[in-house]
Amino acid sequence: MFNNLGNFVLKHPTVVIGSSLNSLAYCYLNNLPFLSTKDERPWRFDYFEPEQDLSFFGLKNKSRKLISPTGEKCVGIEKNILWERLYFELSLQGLNPIVDKAYSMRLEDNIIKVSTKNSRTMKISFDNLVIFNSENIIGLPPSKHFNKKYKVCDWINVKSGKIHPFDFIKTDDNFINEILFYPLPQKSAKKKNMKNAVAISYLTEKELSSFECSDINARFKVLQLMKGAGIKGRKNGIDARNKSRHYHYAVNVEVAQREKTFLEVPYYYSINNIKFNYDSFNDIINILNV
Image (spheres, rainbow, N blue to C red):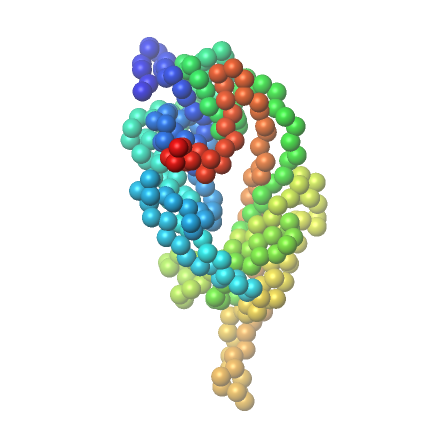
């Protein structure tokens, strides 16, 4: 555990930087404290594989099917469910000393100087440091060159075409690689089973700044894919000659917001008592089977 050494100075033999799911699992399994300058909660549509065993964490990995125009796929529970449990457990054990107040960190010898969001400073002494996320850390060694590639999320407001059976549409293109449909909150939905969407793209920095991959073209491609899947707009009357046939408005969508995140991170080589951890979730929990 941390020990008070004076004016905002703490000490622990091994400290972890990062609040990703991998980082929290590592801390939970090794009873280690973590620091972070950002909330690294998994994306709401990131799922575990259905065969992933989560029983050690007290979770049952219930599987379910997602439907697309071309078939189905099976997924486990959302990753943020485990992230929230681990974050709570580690905080309860006193292993989250900064909570959400850290703004930046500076490494000097075996000291981490943490600047908090309320303009205070905390010094943390360590013997060993494990870094999962190098963002907003000053004093790191030079990083290996990496290509900037982004995961781009275009959040879509579906104006007409909210009701259909699909959970996703998958393509082979980097631009609009996938459209995920999610239910509207019951308070916002006029009818049951109404859905909005988010379109996922994987773009380079050059592609991101091009008109071809703009949010304007994202809207047109989402429209094209939804129409191609047989999705129709809201009903607009009944055919007088065939009472079982309904007329429909055209599908209509708009891009409400575009978000981008780095798909790749800088790579650092571990030196002395500072280790950069790039292990996968399965690599981290494999310690349970040793």
